Image (tube, rainbow, N blue to C red):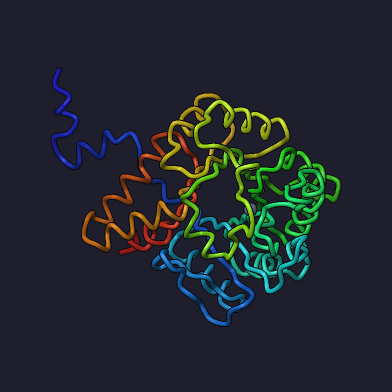
Length: 318
Ligand SMILES: [Zn+2]
């Protein structure tokens, strides 16, 4: 047996390729910032911008034109307080952006649902004393979910890692007539150092403590499976592993165990590390982007949230 026969030319390799970066399965994250009037590049994330409300729809249209099918929105509000009240404002930054983008494009629009961008303390939930109060946070998440649904979002993506968040949000959406709003659950979201550039992007670094009382310890795989099982029981339409590249084992484990769609979030530092090495001439950007995304699909992800989505689609157009 000569396995090299399968590799003898680019054409043969392509015919027998088991995995491809599926362009229609990439989701582009977008940052919309109420405090700015023109786009600002995010430090340490070259080519990724925070956009003002008056530019977000034009950018979304541009994405649609190059073949992007779906976006995930993150908001930076003009006002932060201890309860994150701007998060469920009918005229909040995400609600406005969703309304306009859904009117002007056919993109599938997801919105991140959390409090860390909206609270003055930067935590993902309501603070009581020195800890994050799970159940009062759920009440706020429910309000955010229905305000996003009212704005016309296709799916909400709860990322706060509070216990019971998916069930509470599903119940709220159903009771308000939003039975068709999807829940893309950040099920296994790890307390990772790989979010650093993102926190700079949305100004959400916690003012005290850290997120380890709610996000997952990276040492634990079985616990991550329990998180996914619970979200499935609670009604998640798709589950997510985040970050992606250091957690490929969990993507594969999820693929083997569960029948629902598996998403992976290739996070900010995964992008920054690759970009920075490429810009320093250490690696070739094109081939490393393809290899890294192929590995995430090969591990079993159906959908990948990647900051390289725009780059890949643009390259495709050339
Ligand atoms: Zn958060």
